[in-house]
Picture 1 (tube, helix red, strand yellow):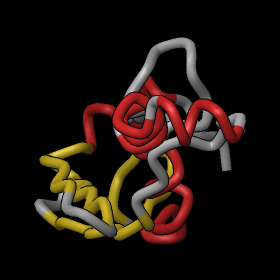
Picture 2 (cartoon, helix red, strand yellow):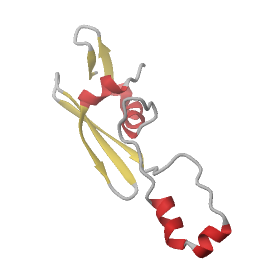
Picture 3 (cartoon, one colour):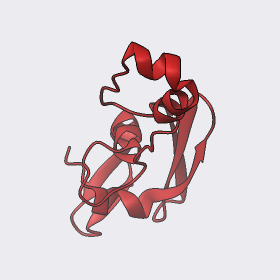
Picture 4 (tube, helix red, strand yellow):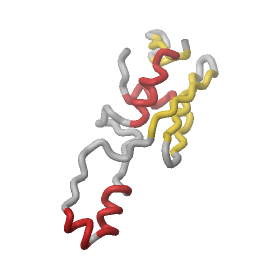
Length: 106
């Protein structure tokens, strides 16, 4: 199944972010059905390295650097966003309609 941000975005009804999870609500406007996908909150997939002297001498900056790293919920150039991860999890509920030129509820 092809997953493109431009095709997924019209399905997004709303996104709820809490401390541990991100809930994405996908709504098919054709059949008026909503599917909820919950994915774990992953603030950053990269590697953040700290030296011992950073933690010892700058503990607040180290904490802020680790816990306040932005996440990508949606991006035109990004392919590994939270919305795309959530949609892949529930993609079996949707099919691509060539007549409608969008995903519809299966």
